[in-house]
Image 1 (cartoon, one colour):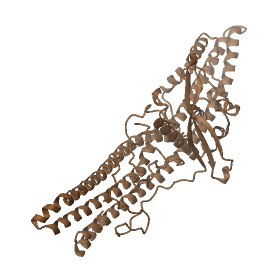
Image 2: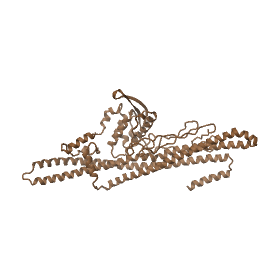
Image 3: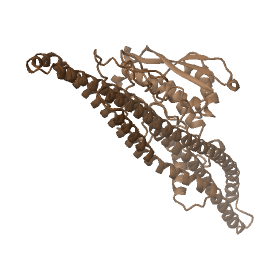
Image 4: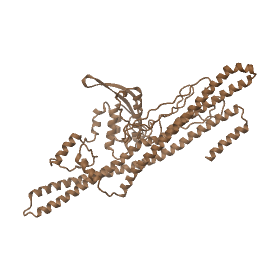
Length: 549
């Protein structure tokens, strides 16, 4: 569950709660949108930043027949076909932030490629189109074709080159090979990739970065693009190379001092085992941190707590939406059952009424039953639309929950870089002590000790290199720290804006749904003979209830 977000609209910025559950007017009755069946099941690699969208399973819609064609117009001032009161308009989810770049991922095409032993393989390419909407970022619109591994490459490059930023997680790879070519999977991946790209486009830094621009503009195969290859970060080697390097370092065949370029890069344990060992040992030492660093570490702990709180809230929202969907479905089922009762009364009751002298009552029973069934179906449709809208708004919780691992990881980058700087500082102090000890020992030898002098000379070279490496590590730490501050401020602002907007829009949806349902039931009460006094009393009771709340 940990990182499985509720799907967002294309073009929505990170943190803006929206989903593909937009109102639909397809079908003879203008059926309401399907409910998002977002599940809290496993999303794959839980703590990783990769996510997969939960499958959307629409609930069954009510079947239309000659008695249910009473759909109202969801627009201000419109009246129902039965001459009832005006229908309420359900508010739509607006974009909460101005997006300067809009990206669409469309037109998946299957391609074949030669494989080993003459076996052909296949993959899917997607058309990625970009459109800039801000004059400050005015560039020509582009359209290129990319395959999934290109999106993976983009995510890897951004993760390595923009340490400290809260980079939106990319869609997860498919673990089941046989599912990759099914239409359902291809469409699911297409929408997930489009959401991912638009999250990047909404980021204030990533939207204008060279990596994203090259991804959107480089023609042909991305892997063959010289511009793209030039942006790839330095490779740090693999486990085999790391093991060979460790052997040389232990036997003195290779210097153990980290150079400034490597000092500004994250530690890859498999490629530099000795460095990883030293940093692990350093992490066990008691260290003193500045107030600013302590505040940032507390912020990471608070995000961990917030993640658990969002998990609880998202589960509760899921339960609420499912119960709303169940209620609307039961209302619709009851309405259809009442139509069957009316039909039975119409077919069977007519003959019996002639023998019992209850023709008038028979007609009244059939008419009232139809009207009751009609009202139930109408209220069911209102409820179903409100359910779909509620799922859209409450999806804010699910979206922020899916983003928390990326935020925690962005803050962890700074802590790891500080650990690298502290480890280098400890190495520097150790070499200074070694130089002093050698100088003292050499002074006791008449005429000096040439071997010790060579060792001192080597240590001084290491010291000079270490000082440069420490400067590089500290500079990278300061850079990441600045990014952390900016990203935390942005996250707080986005959460405040989106959660307030979620509450406002959810309450507006519930109010519109309740008022529309009240109108339907009051209309039915009037049609079935309720007096004006009874209707007014019901209205006053409803208004009093709202006032008490």
